[in-house]
Length: 193
Image (cartoon, rainbow, N blue to C red):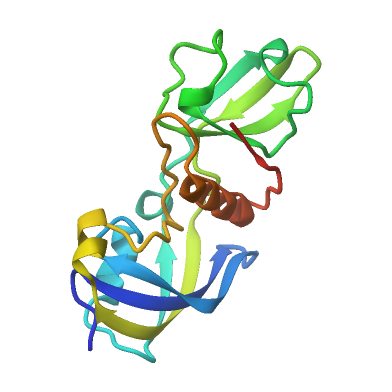
C-alpha cells in the first residue's frame, strides 16, 4: 500500500539542524496518521505516493516546521509566583500559570522556563525548535489503512510534531508530547503542573 490521505505510516528518522547537529533519532518505527495532526504538512506532502522501504531527505525552513521565533512569546515573570524548586527546562501549561503572571500570556501554549534570576523567571512560549531550519532523513517501514477511531481523533496518539495544551487537569498524553519536545530541544526538566 502506498501512502495516501488518512492512512497510517510507520516511520524512523534522524532530525538535525542545518549545521548537522543531531536533535532527535527515532530508531524504532512509530506510527503516524497522515491527514491528521501527527505530522507537519510539508512532511505529509513529501510522503504522498511512497511505500514501505522508501527513504526521504527533507530540508524544512522554520515556516514549514515550527515557525519563526517570536519575541512577544517571552515573558518576564516575578520569581515569587512560582515554586521554589522550579528549574530551567521545566514546562508549564498556559492555563496553569499562576495568578499574577502577564495577562497577555496566551493560555493555549506550553511555556518553557528558559532563565531564572533571583527576582524573575523567563517563560518562553515558542516551540523549542521555533526559528530553526531542520533536516529530516526518514524511512517508511509500513503503511496501513487508518481506523475510523484514528481518523475521527485526527491522530494515532503520537503527536511528536505537536505540542497541545489541554483544558484543565494534565493529561498523560500531554506529558508525553511535552517530553518529546524537551527531548528534541535538549531539555531534561520535568513537566510542572
